[in-house]
Length: 195
Image 1 (cartoon, rainbow, N blue to C red):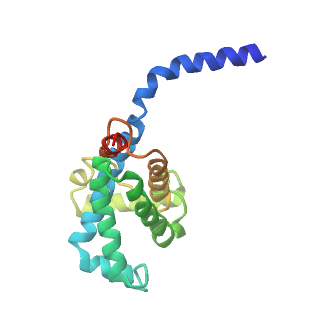
Image 2: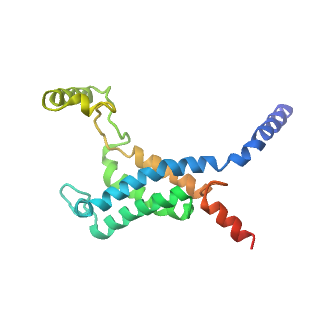
Image 3: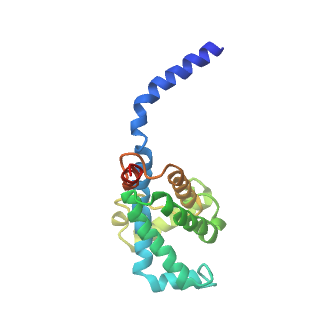
C-alpha cells in the first residue's frame, strides 16, 4: 500500500510542477468575476444615493440600519472602489476584508430571511403558479417577447446564495492575494522585496 501511495505522490508531483506557474490564474478569474459584480452594485448605489440612504434607514420597508447615510456611502464606495482594486489586483487582500464585511451585512440584513436560494425554484408548485400568472399578465399587458428575448422570466427568491458565494470568493482572495504574474500586488511585492 505504501508503494502505491508513493507512486501516486510522485505522479502528482510530476503533474503539478508545470502547473505551478499558472497558480495566478484562479485568483485572476475570481477578481475578474467579482469586479463587475461590485462595480454594478456600488455605482448603482452611488447614482441613486438618496434612495440608497432611504432604503438603508427605513424601518418599514427598508433595512432599518443605524446611521444610514454613513453606511450607505461606506457600502457604495467600498463596492465601487473595491471593484477597481480587484480588477487591477492592487491591495487585493486589503480590499477583500471590507468587501467581505459588506457581504456579511448584505446576507444578514437583506437576504437571510429568504433562505438560501437567490432564484426561486420554478419547479415548486406555488412558484410555478405565480410564474404562470405573471406570464399571463405580461403577455396581455406588456411586450412579453421583448421582456424575455434575453432570458426566461424568473421569480427572485433573494436568498443568501449570491452573498455567500461572493463571500467565499473574497475569502479565497484574502488568502491567495491577487495572483502571481497577473496582479499589481505581485509586481509591487517583487519590486519591494528586491530592495
